[in-house]
Image (cartoon, rainbow, N blue to C red; front, side):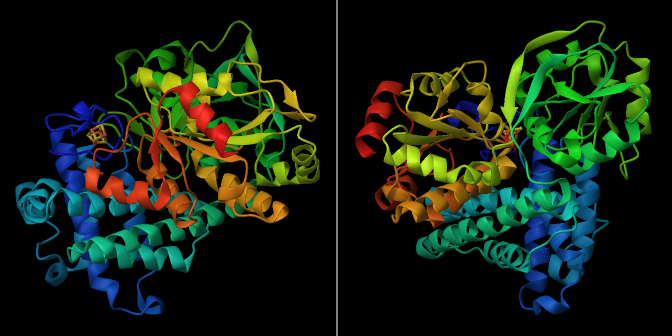
Length: 528
Ligand code: FS2
Ligand code: SF4
């Protein structure tokens, strides 16, 4: 195996014996085969007019890529089944291998496309740029998958997925073409983020500021993690009147802001922090646990019998829910003790999507003009387990009182638990939602630039991203496509970006790693 697609990659260079994430070498190799199969499938249809492509093509490519995103699928049997489906769809002449071929044959078939092989023939710069594009596509696939759960698709997104995968299959090696494809990936990411935003708002109503109980109340309980609002709504419907309380976990926290979800009285609160705390937190949750999408970690024995996966998430031996029939989850929740006491560790305000923030635009613009609000800092993205991530906590709590902090993604957990107070009558910490809601930050930044008659780069705005997995990669590409400069990224730079490629990004966009809090803060203030 060789995998360096996420921030926690071993020694900052690549996982080679077993994933830090828990991915086995066999699962990792099979994921590489699946990506290769997806590229071959895309090639088969690259020259077929979009209207003549099968309707199953786009969802199949999406799922194939989303399965390989960090912390999604660790189950070799399910990955192998998917490979066979994709190879069959590509057809033997295009694939060059039979769908029913033995696993070893499939591994040998994809060997030349593996990262190691390309590093040896194309060099680290080209391979890194190819992988940057692939990881951007993986992130885009995840967002497109979510939108498709709500019956939304965008032909621009579907077409780019085919075009870009086919280019990768053809071995595109020209640095300038690869850079252009990566920026195009960023451009199309804006489409998919807008699509997902509209799907969520149309289906569940526009998020509105809503306080969420951080804690629990007595009663049977189900914890819902991941990102999938469609699963959550179906579970809320199926548990209504059954005496079971539903809690959000991790990236499901923003669910409480949607009118069509918060109307369920048994959606009572939020339990726990970001994904990487689950092995400590899940054993303490006295009910059933549903993982709708990433981020899943290796389950421990004391909760594996009451853990369930959905969608593309899978772990060997963990029960998987098909067709949104949550009967086994409900049974497990009723069989578990549930909570017997009440604990309130606090309240967190969610629901500051673009609609809520821009609803206060006049107030915000007036406060900026009056000097009451000096600066905006977008601090968000993914969380992770490294100690260096305390940077984000320290930054958030050190930022001057006349700055507004916009946050999103599970990276927000680094900012919670501190009273930020208010500025100009607004909360200083505005939670815009999941990583899937990054569109809100883009929309607010563009609207502010419009209101002040300047570019985003001329706004008193700093963007400090925490990255972990591939959704963050496509969001970064989207910001670069918008020509947003001086983005800070951390806690570490991606292993797949070589010094030469980084230099290109630094020269063109001023992309920089996070540094010391005081130094960074001073630089952000000077730029304001
Ligand atoms: Fe967080 Fe994990 Fe949201 Fe990422 S729950 S790091 O894959 O998707 O952010
Ligand atoms: Fe390693 Fe990340 Fe790949 Fe897992 S996803 S094998 S942790 S680089």
